[in-house]
Image (cartoon, rainbow, N blue to C red; front, top):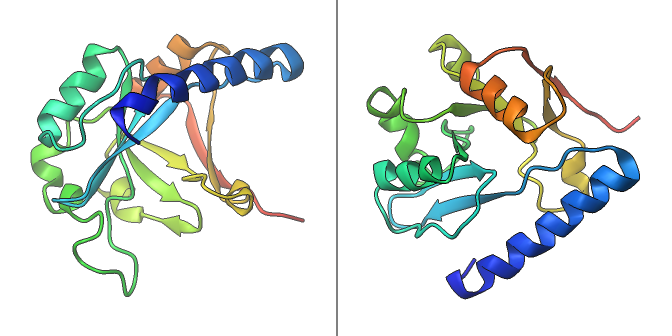
Length: 170
């Protein structure tokens, strides 16, 4: 997403968050995936409030996410079978260097489960990486906390009361 469109994007998300709360009592936390197409990594920023340049270093992107009191998640860090080794592999290749930089690592995405995240005892969440309606049926995080943004962010940072499950269409 271009910088000049980001504020408009957030306004739409905030408006939908307000509607979701009023109509469904559902908490929606605006976020964006910061994608670096040079080193091929994706970083999810939850509760982001401003644009972050994807060409910055991993450390600088995470710093800018944290400066906004947002959550930084290392997205789909491990390789899938048959996947191009350049795609999304940079973070996992450097996971020891970055292990404590991120608030959480993505342990599941759509149909993929990255058990290496659990084996390395990293903080985790599951994510649908929602791009199409069919992605609704995917891995989800169930976070036991008060129903407000700060409580959810705290639970993610502390890796506390988080369960993952695969939501399938009946």
